[in-house]
Length: 446
Image (cartoon, rainbow, N blue to C red):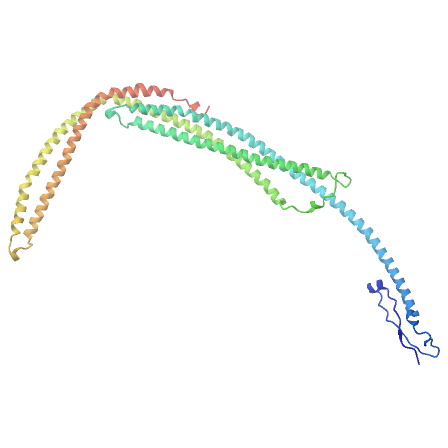
């Protein structure tokens, strides 16, 4: 009887199998066939530890194939490594050269912007100095307006000491009030213009500070980029900074970088233009205010001269008015007497009409009728009553007019004695004081 069937252990090249180059061999089954088979009870237990010949050859072929594969892979890897080394060396050199070139272009941009900022800073400095000179002129002109204000105020206060009818708002007072209002308006205008000048000086200095800060940043950036442009692979100052490749959150873009400086320059040029326009405006304001003040001063002097002339012949005119008032008083007294008589004349007709109405009220029964006579009598009473009221009103007006004319007569009689006092105030006090009015140069701020 043949021996039992035993399975042999396969020899596997795990590396070849993992690369898919070799499939694992299936175990062969050793069968006990033939007449000279060594199978038997004597060999039982030894056959399981041995390989077959085919397994031995197959193991050798696997080792050869693995060695050849490693050789080919190593050769390919060496060729690719040399090629990659050469390519990376060239790309690294090109990248460094491009970065150096771009740093040079960046330096040119920085230099251009820095020069433009420097030019504008110098222009703003000169403009601010000119504006400060105009500001000092405004302050001097503002101080010079105090003298005209004191003169006009003193003139008005002196003229307040006029008495009687001379204490009137005449042309002189109107011109003095106009002069005082003009001085106040000029002072307010100069103060507002001075405030604008101060504000503009601050704005000029603020934008100048902004431009200087921008210039300082660009100067520092220029120094940094210039130093970066001098670095190369042979420099000993370079070292690794792995964290520097990360973009910072506050990084600007080329567009925002250019726009930032452009906006600053536009603001600086705008402030420079506004400052120049303000200087021209200050010149115009000082010129106009000086001319207006001197013109108003001339108008006041003319009004004073005219008023003094009028004051000289006022006495004759007052006497003429007094005579007219006396005549009118006499006529008004006569008119009052006539009005009183007219009122007394209405009493009899009114009594007649009211008596008729009273007696007709006693008519019996249906005779108490609203006939045309009744309507006419009622209308007659109303007309007479209205006439009396009109006459009484007119009488009151006449009495008031008479009283007023009597007051006026007393005032006119008193007014003649006040003319000398008024002439002394206007001619000897006010006109003498006005000779201290400041000249045009002082009003212009020089």
